[in-house]
Length: 286
Image 1 (cartoon, rainbow, N blue to C red):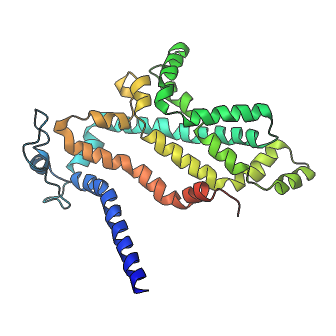
Image 2 (image 1 turned 60 degrees about the vertical axis):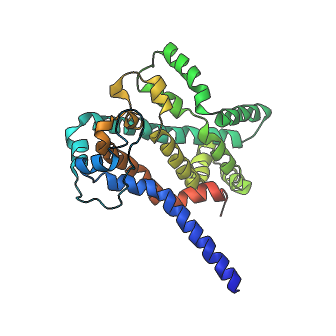
Image 3 (image 1 turned 180 degrees about the horizontal axis):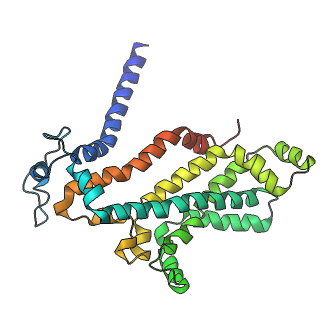
């Protein structure tokens, strides 16, 4: 028993150290966003020099000498280009999350109801597209957007995102686990396909829909490749792409922008962690 307790204690300590290492970059980003410009220069001056080599060690601080909100003031009130790109991210992510979830739910319902060889073949195609890295489909998306005239518009991002096959596989597998007795009872009561979908499938798949919506939001909130290839105008680019372009003289502003950019994802994750776990891990009926 004593050896077991020692073993559990060592395992707990190792996990705590790993957890602290994982959250350390986030903590440092938040702390550095409150540093003054002079303190950032003292801490990261060696890294900001020319030549590509660090002549001195970087000083990482967990507590600023003098906390200031100047970086947030600059970002929110004095730099409209950054705030515009933040709202560009919202403009892209919100419609894609809502509409891709809706389209995927309808497609998943079609795949799990009355399966046939044709539907299984199409579903296999969806699965292949899901397994492909997005970089593989960037060139076809670029060529199609050029032909459709959507290149360098918001539709170049919205249309491929709305009809992405990512969520179809997860929702199809989840819907296939709904007991058939529910469907048979609904059909005996005279329910049509739309009523079965709306009154049986959707209520039973709330956790899966929420989990899929969260994953879609995280994916497109942090997208880089799509706007880099499909958007040429700088005023249309999201903040996720522009963060990497903030020059070295605005490192403090980059920290503040990164913190503000993390807030929606953190709030969504903390508020929907239970649904995310239930929708992906359990994936079944109660």
